[in-house]
Length: 129
Image 1 (cartoon, rainbow, N blue to C red):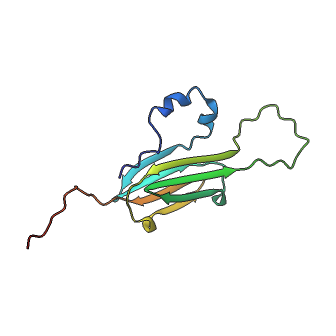
Image 2: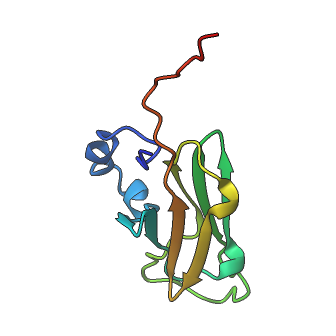
Image 3: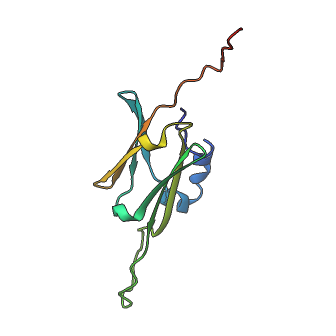
């Protein structure tokens, strides 16, 4: 299993020129422990109900959406840096048992445990009659 983010490595270089992309980035750590791959993603300021996870064609996708509270119309902002909108991050996890994926969200950190993909050396043995 690769667990590489679903984007090209040089994309990070171009993010330095587009400040909006840096704000929407979901930073993560990926590590192996006890025979499983683990992903820890920082998603501060969100509630569990604002986060969705899905798996499709070997890609694990995490999405989070935060909506701006427009209840107070009389506010006149001097500076506004907090991001409202959608965050999205995908990881290639390969052919794993999706029912074995576990996730926990606590203190702004989403922890995901993914079983490792079964190793396939590409060989197939054929019985001879």
